[in-house]
Amino acid sequence: MAVWKEYKIGDLCDTISETYRGHDEEVILINTSDVLEGRILNHQKVPNRNVKGQFKKTFKTQDILYSEIRPENNRFAYVDMKDTSLYIASTKLMVIRANIEIIEPRFLYAILTAKSMTQELQVRAELRSGTFPQITFKTELATIKVCVPDRKTQKKIVSFLDAINRKIEVNNKINRNLSEQAQAYFDELFIQNASAEWKEGTLSDVGSIVAGGTPFKSNQEYYTDNGIAWITPKDLSVDKSVFISHGENDITELGLQKSSATMMPAGTVLFSSRAPIGYIAIAANDICTNQGFKSVVPNGNVGTSYVYYLLKQLLPTIENMASGSTFKEISGSAMKIVPTVIPDDETLKRFSDFCDPIMKQIWKNEQESKRLVELRDSLLPKLMSGDLDVSDLDI
Image (tube, rainbow, N blue to C red):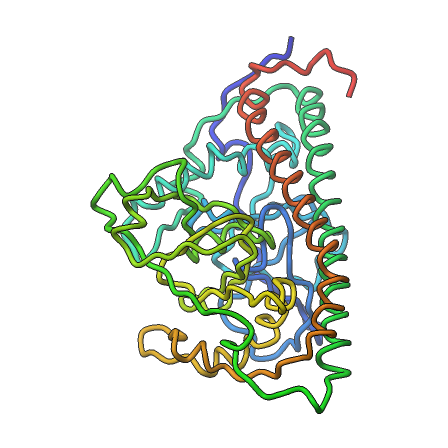
């Protein structure tokens, strides 16, 4: 039986602020938006000149990048790259380094990214005064107490979790490859080989543009944990899946009736129209949204896949058509007149025939990954507390 000992997180790790002082011609800048659920998303080199002052921190292999802003958004990453010399992190990212005398870096990562931990940090962030919920290492993170087993048990727990995470990452890689195939075929059919005979039209010619609405937040009868799927832009900021079935909150039938939210069928392409413009996802089931969307219900001859990739291609045009002083927004009337060409039905069908099996496989892989995440998250508290003993397991 493993022996567990209580520590403050500040005893298990430290936050590192080592300033980049290199003279490389090109560097890679990592902002809070460039890390998500364990992965560093950006590896694009940019010229090392006029780099904004917020990019200062260096990091190395086995460090943990952890956003100070809105912990529940899962903006964190474990650094497993061998060469990090060109990378510079924003000052809004904590660079956390494990005290390897006590804790395995990946075990520390498991502690810091457990749902119970991000929820606790979110509460602490919201208790601070400021423009948005934010934490600091010293005040909010370092003081939290956790229990840690011996190093052998830590390694076994990490191996168990890594097996789940590897399968999730395999699914993600397959989906990225499938999406790239669909995107490449879209480009081939509708951009590289666009026909001069295709008619000029607008977005309203390929589908119905549908806005959303929000039931009064003060009325608890309008909201429920298990009801009508209701999506906000925040839901798509957290869930980067191609398909979405539910958001953080569902609404009741009464909430739907008492708001301007509109039910839309599975296959609708959701498009966030403000704060920010351009989150895109496909409804996996009947769904409605808040007013932050101008979604597209595809016409029968057009198909979901075409509208999904078309909106990605039209995003710069839509952004240019947006207006507003506080933040940019594309109105429903403007969304309807976004210019586009209307391909012939035969070419649209060819694209749908190619993409439909791809999109179905992407959906299946996303569903499997979500089940694995639920399994991991349900087991994690038991593993991290010692309630589920792995000391005798041969992992």
